[in-house]
Amino acid sequence: MSYSYTNLQIKTGDPGRVREAIDLCNIGTAKMLARAEVSWVSVYPFMTEDDFAYLKECAERVSRRMALPVFGFMVPNGAVFRYILYEHGDLVDEYSYDPQAQELVSGGKVDAVLSLAKPGMKKSRLQQLLHPSQPPQTERDREVAGDRLALQFAEILGIPRVQMCVGFNHLKWAQAGR
Image 1 (cartoon, rainbow, N blue to C red):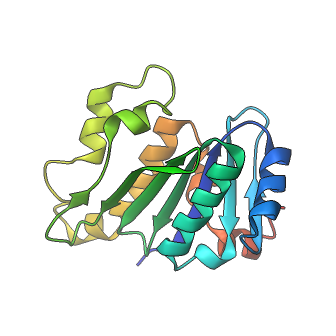
Image 2 (cartoon, rainbow, N blue to C red; image 1 turned 180 degrees about the vertical axis):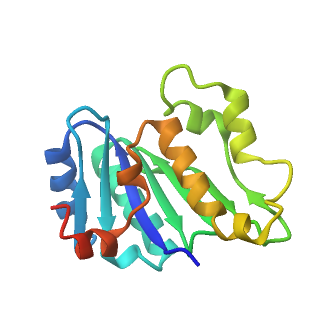
Image 3 (cartoon, helix red, strand yellow; image 1 turned 180 degrees about the horizontal axis):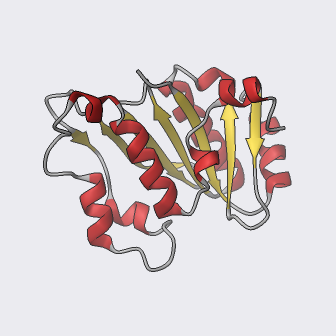
């Protein structure tokens, strides 16, 4: 069994502005990671660790306040992958991939994600990633499907892996983030 994590990914190179927005949005205790060479700032709100509804609320608040695209990602126990995407405070897409569910995928607007992807990303690759033709075949592959999808999203969007596949508790244990 894998671990669970949630995070917000804000499309900006200005961590100071993100920190200010996080404080003004009153989302509670949160950690943040940013790199000068990356155009994404990652925020890890503590109260979203097991609460997708609150993750959505946080993403909406930050997106509205900053007038920027904000993803909220959740990977519960490594298997399931969920995201919400807000732009300027408006919900653009809500996606869920669950290899154990009757309906493998819900949501997944390729054009919305493609507009935020690294330059040169092929629409067909993103379509295949968001809408796979079949679920993972082995039990082990199903157990880590969410983690794998999160890593692929990190690559597509240009978010460092270390910023994507962690949550508040991981950073707290590692005494990382600010």
